[in-house]
Amino acid sequence: MTTPWPPRRTARRPLAPRVAAPREPVDPARIGRRVVRRRAKGMDAGAVAAALEEALFDARQDSRYEDLADDVRGPAELAEWERIAQLLADAPGTVYDPDADDVVQAELAADAAAAAAREAELRKAARIAARADELQALREMGTLEQTEPRDGDEAVRDELTCRAGGYVQADVDAWLAHALAAHLGHYRDPAARAAAAGLLTPPVLAHAALLAELARLVPGADVDQLAFAARFATTEPEATGALAVFLARVRS
Image (tube, rainbow, N blue to C red; front, top):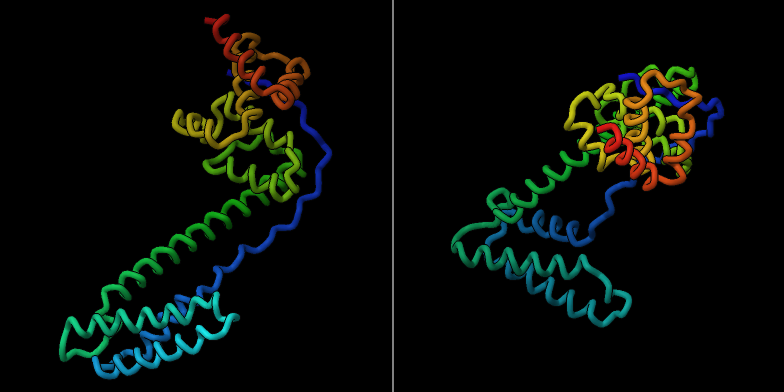
C-alpha cells in the first residue's frame, strides 16, 4: 500500500530550551527519623528511655511557640524514639541496631526501589531527548519523511511539542500519521498500532485513518490531491474519523 505523503513545511519554529528535572524535595520528618536512629544505635533500653524523656521535654517546650506549630521534624523524632523504646521493650537485654530493625530495612528497600525508578525515568528522558534532537536534525535537512518511526517516538513527539512551547508541529504529526497509515517502522506490529490509539492525539489518529482509506480507494494518488487530509484532521478530527469509517464501509 502506498500512502501519499502530505506537503512538507519548510518553516521551522525555534525550539524552547529544555529545563533540568526538579530535585527531590527535602523531607524534614525523614531527616529527623534518621538522626534518631543514628543516635540510638548501640543504646540499651535505659539509654533510649532517657533520650525519649528528653524528646518529650523538647516537645513540651516547642509547643509554647506558635512559629513551631507547623514543625514536622520534632514530632517525627519523638515518634521514632517512642517506636525504638517499644522495640527494645519487646526484646529485653538487647541494644538498638538499625540493621536489625525491620522498619528501617523496609524503608531502605523502598528507597532503593524509588531510586532505581527515578534512574530509569532519567534514562528514558535522556533517550527521548536524544531522539528528539535526531528528528529535529532530520527536519532541518528535509529528510524526516524518509525516516521510519521507532518505538517511543510518540513520546518524542510530545517532547518536541513541549520544547516548542506547545506549538503543534504539523510536519511531525503528518510524519507519524503517514507511518501509522502505511504500517511503517514499529507500526508494522499490530500491537504498536493498537497502542498508538492511546499515545497519539485525535487529529493524528484521524489523519492516519483517512490517509489509509484514501490510499486504498485511490492507489498512488498525488500528494497535492490529498493535502486536504491533514488540514481536515487538524480542524475537524471527529468528522475526519467518521469520514474514514464511512469510506471503509463503502469500500467493503
